[in-house]
Image (cartoon, rainbow, N blue to C red; front, side, top):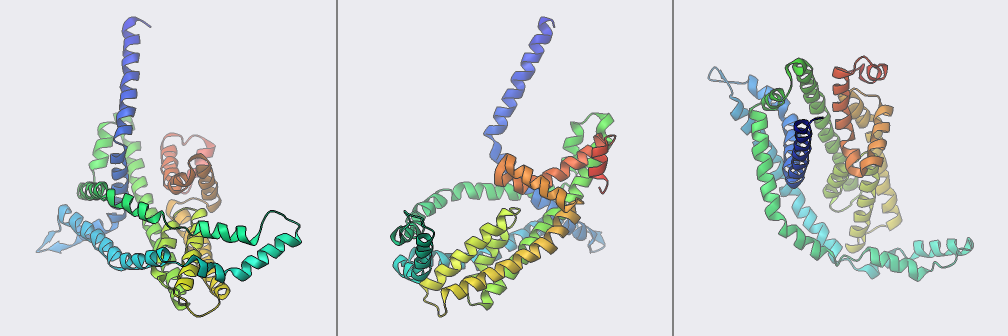
Length: 363
């Protein structure tokens, strides 16, 4: 290469490095865009319905439809704060004011059985006092005040992010072709048809997927909340909502949600000195989460993951596990939408390969 070509390559690399550095510095903006894209995709069906409405013989303009969708989102958020925040405050009060000695006395018999089991198995070094000490350390909530201080200090950034997401979402809903126009302006003419197919199919499949996830969260929340309410567990709606929300983490989410729900149920039972044996309550709460998980595994996940993105359940399982190994919990959450997009891209550009044909035959 001559000097001019070398200089061009060096400038290109320097520009790429600068671009990556700039993207990293403003990565929060990309997060806002990602959340806004999800909200816009979920609002597409509503935008279609509102676009077909006629007011005085004229179709509802796109800006008005987008405003209605945003108001709906804001109303849902309002309901969330209206119903869940008081319950959350009540639960936090229970946790902060929990009498650890009273709780340990409730676990006195199980701890004694554990100690006897260790003794019978000739396992040394584990005593009853040590077990109680570990439980007491686990229930040390002195750090909660620090956590709340951090939350309050971050409210300013949270408000900026919230307003930014609303602003971006409005224009993504109003100008339906804005993403297509940006991508098309950067795409060579010979690839325009393939890129437009990718954008169209990605929007359709991911719209169904994200709406399905919201339905999944709602059903799990309902099952857990109703079940725990029937068994007299305080703050059942909060536990149900958290279980449904955490459930978006494939495979690990249900276990985390169950552990969270069981812990809060037992803590509330002890603190409020409710009637009934703690072990019986444990069985009831576990039963509720088993029913919720069975429904999720055999009804919701096949319909949401397999049907919405048109992939085999085993295929989805392998993809999620691989993503979890590569990128942890975040990878597991993003695995299905990312894999869906990559399959659509592969179908458009690598259709000649048999493995691609096999993976994309249902798209």
